[in-house]
Structures are given as structure tokens and as C-alpha cells.
Length: 429
Image (cartoon, rainbow, N blue to C red; front, side):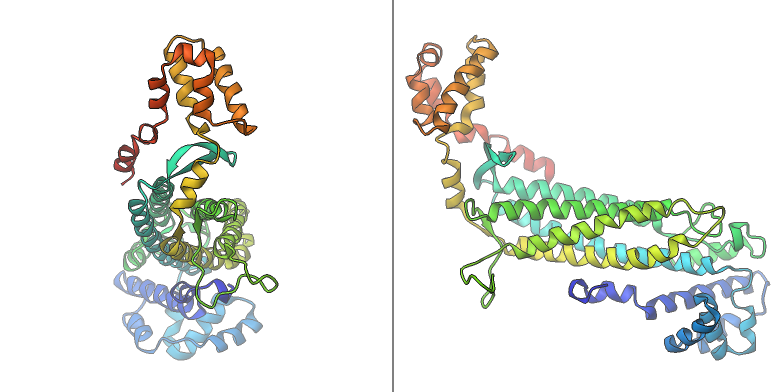
């Protein structure tokens, strides 16, 4: 966890304080269930509630000797509870606590991330509404293609993050399982009703079938979902970075009072936030690979996954939380330059109508290949700065023999090219 890229609410989820509190709750709920079925004497759970504490420094001290974190925790807990502590953790194995806790923490983290996405969606919807009819050049391969609107750029991002929200909901549901089935998952020394009780208390689902651990395909899906969200963050960040380039300058990250862009060049206004988001996205995506490799454990369990998850669980959730919030701020404060959009739109003398001309010639009976060659030949003259597209079309003999001046004039109508914007908006919003 890097403090620079951490937000308090998410960081608290992965604190030792929260982890041990969840461990304590799991043990308490398990004792409540054991008491209900008569497996342990009544009053143990109440004793945990009344006297149950933990001391992180003491747990660390014990772990240095016993080399086992759950045993160190239980030993410290027993120091507060007294003789009745012998009934705590009865019939359970360490992974009952570890995996149930991890899944609970991932669920906590997932809920925060879901709220982050909802906040981003609001910002994207607002900017999409504002710039719905703000015409700009659409590009493919980085080259001018056909007109679009700045609003559609926000709209496609909205649709993408709306899909991300649905995927995340499913991933949260899939990871929200409780496992209290004992060593190798056979319930040999613990009643399945204990698992049912703990799951209900923690608002988790019962793990359908476990070995000594919760199957790691669930976790792989959760981290994969975060990786896809990271990809969507980078996609939008990259678009902003390109549009902020000096030669384009259709949008710009807000440059705040007192901000400096370069230690050497006082004039610089760099897209530092979206560049940062690109880097953070790479980190989150990289965690997907070890998460997938964690699926294949030896037999009923090994602990090769454990060290991996100690890194990727806090780091990926903390990073994606920070990135989503940063992206929301970028979108809210993004400066738009409609005049530059118009300037760039007109840069190639109307070439963005080339497909409309091609289709008009075809409609009038010219073979597609011949029509394509006519239009491309004229278009290349425009590229070579030998005139404007419409003027050259009107001067061309083959075009004038096929299309009237009125037909050519009517082709050069941006409203026609963008006539379905409202239709797209209805589908997205």
C-alpha cells in the first residue's frame, strides 16, 4: 500500500485492526452457533463479547515464536478470556477464519468500489448532457475519420463503466462466501449449521463445497473484474491525454492556481493526472495474473496463494478506489475547447464527407470500385493541399456528370452525419 495512492476508508478495511476484529467476530459467531447445538457450554460467546480483545503488538510477539498468525491471535485472545478460551475455534481450521475474513474484506472493498463507479457515472452523464451536440472530429488510427460529438465520448465511457458496475456486482456476489468446514472441508469435527449461522451473521453466502480453502476461481474472477475496470480507466485517460496534446487541444485537465507543470519549462501544462491513471491501471491489471495462478493449489490446500493475496487484495482495491476517484475529479473539472474542435474539424477541407460522396455516387449507379477511385483521387489532392474537397468535387467531370451541384451541396451537411445522436443517447441513458 502506497500512502500517496490510498484513501482512508479503503485503507481501513485492510488494517490489522479491522482484520483482527473480523477474526474475533468469526470466532464469536462460531461459538454462538456451537452453543445453540450444544457442542460447547453456554456463555463462551458472551464471554468473548465481554472480555474478547486483541493486542496487535502482542500478537506479533507471539507469532515470532509460534510462526503462525492464527495461533498467535488465538493465544492472545485466550490471555483475555481465560480458561473458557479452550472452547474457541473448536473443530475449525485456520482457513475457516482466514478465508471467511478475506472474502468479507473483499466484499467491504467491493461495496466502496461500486459507490466509486456510481459517482463516476454521475459525472460522465452530466458532461455527456452538457456536450451532447458539441461537434468534434472522430479519429481512427489517430487520423481524422468522420465527425462525432464530445458528448458521445463521455457517453461511451458511461456505458462502459455501467457495464463495469454490473460485472462488479456479480464479482462481489461471487466472492461473498463463508467457509467454516474444518480441515479439508469435510465437516468432520464441526457441524455444518455453524457455517450456516456464521454466514448469516456476516451477510455472506455459504461456500457450496470447499476443501481446506475457498476455491480460488472466485478470487480470480474478482481480481479479473478489477483488471477490466482498470482497462476502462486507462481507455478514458488515454483519450484525454491525446485530446490534450498541443496540436489537438480539444480538452485539458484543469490547471489549478499555483500548480507547476515542469521544473525546467515554466510554460508546461501536462496531463499528469491521466498519465498517472494510466500507470495505476497497469498495476491493477498486473495482479490478475497471480490471482489466476492461485487457482491451482495442491490437493485440498497449500499456502502458495497466501503471500500473493497479502499483496494483491489490499493493493488492487486501494489502487482502483483511488484511481476511480481521481478519474471522477478529472471528468468533473475537464476543460473543453469547442473552438479548437471546430478548427480541427475543418483542418482537412471537408474530407470527413468522403464516405457520403462515395455512397451518393454508388446510389446514382456507379460501380463501387470506380466510385471509390474517383473519391480517393480527389481526396489525395486535398491531402496534398491542392484545394478543398467540395470545390474539387464540383470541378471533377465524372462527379458533375453523376451528381448535381445541389446534390453535392446537400452532402456537406453535418446535421445529416449526426442525425442519430439522440437515438444513441436514448439507448445509453
